[in-house]
Amino acid sequence: MNTRKGNIEFVKYAVFAFILLSIIFYERWHDNKIRKYGVYTIAKVDHQERAADVGDLHVDIYYGNEVRRVRLNKSCGGCDGKFFFVKVQKDDPFNNILFYENNPVPNCILKNPIPSEGWKEMPVCKD
Image (cartoon, rainbow, N blue to C red):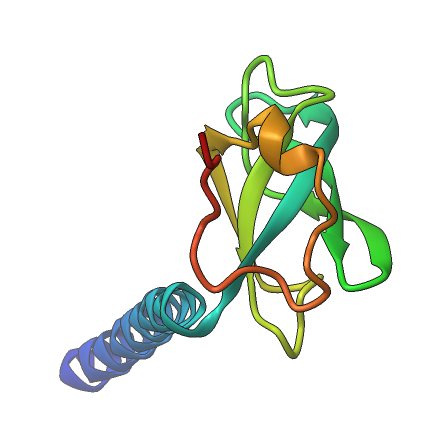
């Protein structure tokens, strides 16, 4: 009887591990897909709600003729009111977002309109 109970416990742990690994691999695949096929656009950080260990970053995403507020599960100290580059999927720009907190948008880029389809490469200022 103990062997059967041990087998059931093993199966439970194996199923749990399989689900957890599937989620991790899906997230990595998904992020790589955005990195490879996504386009750059701009996001303005509105505000941040801080929890004990993680923050919720509320940002306005500018894509096409739309501006939409989304919440990202990220922290970004001192980012309120600043613009940053984000990479999005063209077919779902407000749900699939990579936030580049180390890439604030320079003023020379903010002075010009954002292309309706975003940028294929992160734009740089022309001196």
